[in-house]
Length: 291
Image 1 (spheres, one colour):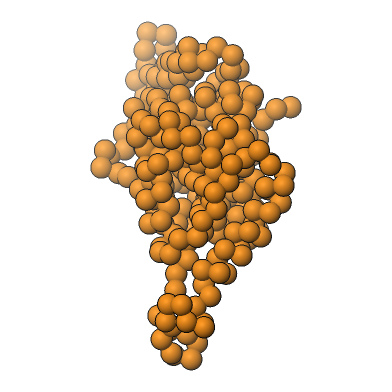
Image 2 (image 1 turned 180 degrees about the vertical axis):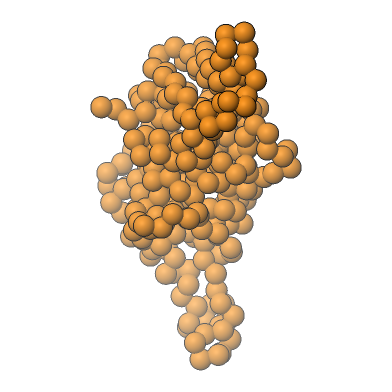
């Protein structure tokens, strides 16, 4: 069975571009689209006002939201198979659970009722930090959302953090027919282990070389598997978060890996992912790596 691309819908303004982006993504990969609305309204059903049908108003609202989102998706691309689900659960928990049987999860950057000043809503952050499938948070300007740059940006971390992200990035670049820019950031410490200052170009200054070697090692198998993907590897000095946020201004999608430790139930999102989720200028894909 083909796993669906799941998108969370809640009737917010941020939900609309997420639905549009998800429809296009589902069409690119030939997978069905599943629209999920989650709320705890059933828990408080007795205290909720009812409408003429006798059903709680929140239930009616939920049905209206998913029906409107489904109509929007079908009008955008009638070829994409669309299904809907209304789940009586906390939104983040419901989406994380849906991700266990999903091609990927898509969320907006903010939900209904969240403060406009928030850089990223609580649901988007929780899902990106807990799901065990790729999570794409939809944010950024029109050019990035529309795929006008024809460029994907992959931020490479260590080997144990990047294997699935590399696979995801090459797959995305191949179906889009776009350039894949691969960046590994590196930083030169001021002093070596003996307390001596490290000079740029000095005998101990091998940090850029190590970064380049790591890029080559991490990409070798993927390049062989996807020979038609145009890949541009680079190593850049500076904080990884800033390097990738700057690069996101000219990208349609920025991709990073994330560590998922089994048996750990808290938020698992690193500093670089956290920075991108709040500040990137295009959609952000967080791809988990099981530990």
